[in-house]
Length: 205
Image 1 (tube, one colour):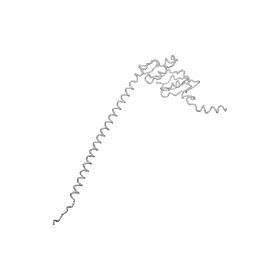
Image 2: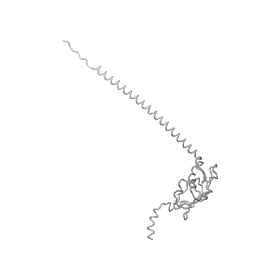
Image 3: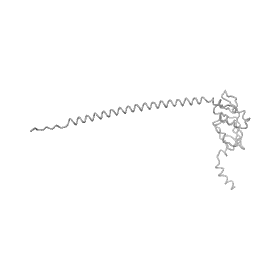
Image 4: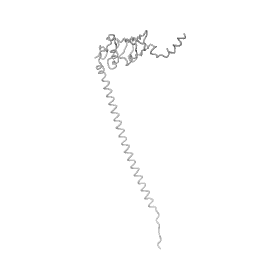
């Protein structure tokens, strides 16, 4: 009993990923079974580091999130068949992971469901060039957005520059008017003072 109490703080301090079984999957002896759960790429859970086998068949996965399988040192195999894999840029991580596996025969049935040009192709044997080419539209859109933002930035800068120039000219005009008015007031004051100097009459003897 005393040994249990000594181990309890250690168990509590362990990361949840080591002890817990991800929902809604079931776990047993290093096997995490997530098959037939209706999971999607966005709802795919993280797996305990002790995982040895993952079953993901018969779900709705289009791709595997980047890095999901990289931190499982005991992982031996992943069952991926019967998912609607969409072979574009997002599938690059899964392709790279499959190519790095020793049991390549286990993954010959992991094939593309879409797009139509890739349908039936084995993901492991896809080339990087043809996958990247499917995403060129994304880069084009990004480039177009960047150019549009740059154009808007230049237009805004031009408007601000014109506003500053007009403001400076206005201030210069106001300054000239102020100097002219001050000069006129000074001249008027001097004239008024001169006109009001009293004249002295001297008697000649």
